[in-house]
Length: 123
Image 1 (cartoon, rainbow, N blue to C red):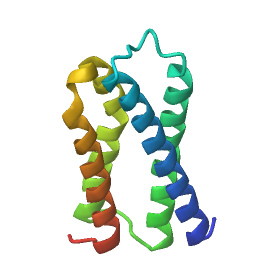
Image 2 (image 1 turned 135 degrees about the vertical axis):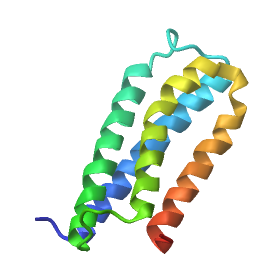
Image 3 (image 1 turned 180 degrees about the vertical axis):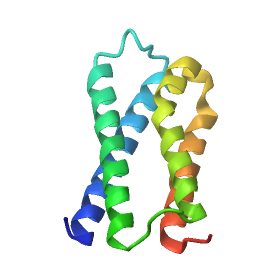
Image 4 (image 1 turned 90 degrees about the vertical axis):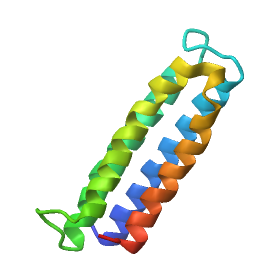
């Protein structure tokens, strides 16, 4: 089993990959780019997918290291829902295109809520 610090590093690595890919695709789409025209579409999708895997696997590793098992506390479920939402946001970004400006703030808010849940563990 890896150390707590290594799991945390992998978790943060995945978060960075996730937000870089979402931000890049979002800027592209907000500036009028389409999915078909995006030459970095595959790279962004791969970065997004690998980031999601790192976040999930390292997150569960962190839970194991701190001794949290089933039944999980509520904040873990909130973070899983956020993970699912961030997993599907790429498709929504392409679908909304330039009209999806509000999604920029939604993604930021989801990141802040996830960080809040991880730091304060409110329930």
